[in-house]
Image 1 (tube, rainbow, N blue to C red):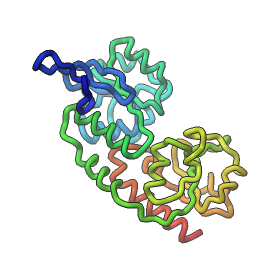
Image 2 (cartoon, rainbow, N blue to C red; image 1 turned 120 degrees about the vertical axis):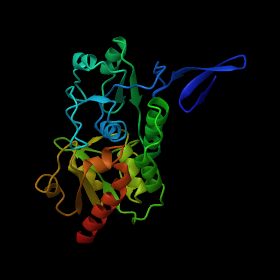
Image 3 (spheres, rainbow, N blue to C red; image 1 turned 30 degrees about the vertical axis):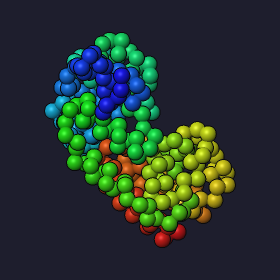
Image 4 (cartoon, helix red, strand yellow; image 1 turned 180 degrees about the vertical axis):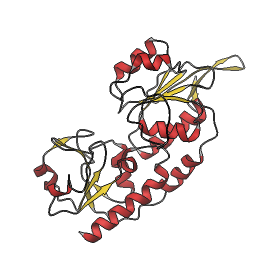
Length: 275
């Protein structure tokens, strides 16, 4: 047996037969045809699907905000999907994420006979590889132009000076981007020093004293999952420059990746210049 483009292939004499596609966690998909009806439980993957195969996307969560004109049935949230509603949509594939969705929901969908493809992404390279497998191997379409563009953009050398950066994603309690995260890898690829890169947790809970002990040069404040804004977040760091950034730029893997690098770079440069 060997793995090729995500498929496990078994040999019978000189004949090759495809036995299963494996998702990012190694679970067999069990489809013998490209899925035609897809429900997405991941906002970033919803945008990717709606951009690339809009005719196949038949359902998404309430949190799936892009594209702005997305018009598909909603199946509640990422943490509490409406499983009966998903079943009524008759999907031949549900896409989920190890980070955003609950294992029990994935297991219940599979127990009902619905194939589920789970992504596991902790870096830019993993994101590109995971999406390539989903679209090329599972959906059997040509690699999307946005994916090629994103790969090119993020392959460029880092250009920013190595400012020390903290990226909170919640407050009360404060939580920050930690180790083994897609967002942390994006920060590092920009040339910045991700000061919580070696944290024991992926999203550790910290207090402001712990954050400031790292003497950050800049605090990145995304507008999701916590909606940091001009009057909610920067005031906690009166002596440190802050940059309000799009959570979609910092945390979503999908079409937004192609423009995210330039957008994040501009915000960082502007914040440091003012600071």
